[in-house]
Amino acid sequence: MKKRIMRLLLACALLLPGLASAAQAERILALTPHACEMLYAIGAGSQLVGGVSYCDYPAEAKNLPRIGSYQRINVEAALRLKPDMAIVMSRNVTGTAMLEKMGVSIVVSNPVSFETMFDDILKLGELTGHTAVAKRLVDRLRMRLQKVRFMKRPETAVFYEVWHDPMITAGGPSFISDLIHQAGGRNIFADINVETPHVNVESVIRAKPELIVVPLERRNIADRRAFWERWLGKGKVRFATINPDLLHRPGPRLLDGLEKLQQALHEKLDE
Image 1 (spheres, rainbow, N blue to C red):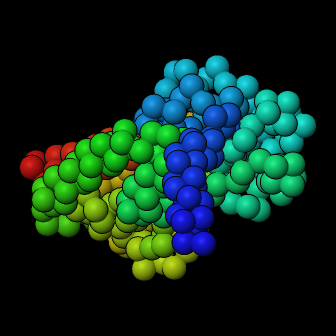
Image 2: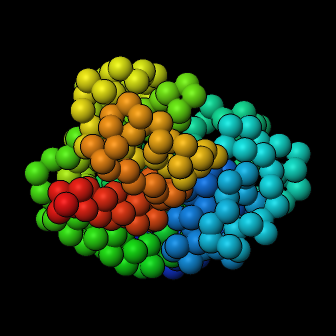
């Protein structure tokens, strides 16, 4: 009996590598832009068969078939691509339940911090067979994060203009607020317990920001600068314009955005 059990255990051990390999996703749908960037960064780009609108980095991602947005999946179009895995921001995304019912493995990725972003990169590395590359990437990103933290200087008051009409900013629970803190700044609306609260000009003036960050997204930057200089005084506040994809997508390029944000904070202090 003992010998029989040993033979069974040995057979299972021999089969396990094959089973692990078979479990690795080979046809992946990236249903959120940050997951798309993660997959390319760990060397799994060739396994991607479809994406959603705004999956536009790196350049190769623009060639992926589009099967919806990060809020809604075109299930019929998605299934035609014969995926074995789909990465979504939430299981509540319309179409997710149907994909799962049809046998597609669902993976949720919605990082809310650097650590959860690192965890997701490592998880995708395991699921796609790129564990070693994912680990090296995370190690490099961790080193860059530590360098930013080491470079912190006295806090600079920051207003982050998510949008201008209506005026929306980043509240305390938002990832943007954490980025400002990590870079060495102080979000002037960190005490508002809402991710993207509406604010008015008067509340910004009262908070006395030293730096205003305006994402380079569908707005006239010269107009925004003139607007705030009219209210706060010319030369009284510094402006920084940053590609929003570097700050709004919790993927590998987030460190690029963090470094640019810190550079803007230090330029203000060095004047």
